[in-house]
Length: 107
Image 1 (tube, rainbow, N blue to C red):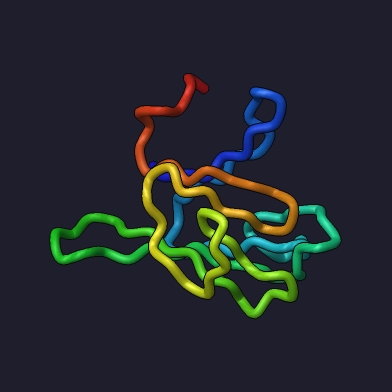
Image 2 (spheres, rainbow, N blue to C red):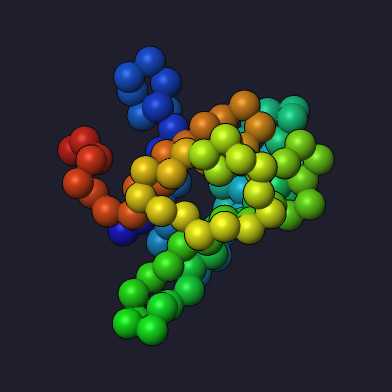
């Protein structure tokens, strides 16, 4: 299963399991994932999953008209496909997208 992880001081601080077709990220508790950060919009971004022609999951992230933007590998984006080990910045939080578990530590 794909996930996004945030590492602080060598420890996993937050893990977002991408186990549904769509999830929202933002400051509001109404989101699937809540990030407590005043520079994160109420509803900041969405991760969604589509199937490619081989029936495999393809993951995308899109900005939901946030005030401070969404960054993928240091580039401001509106919507982009996520690739293994991409870095996503939402507010002050940086997450690494892991499409598969080869780099994940046991948990």
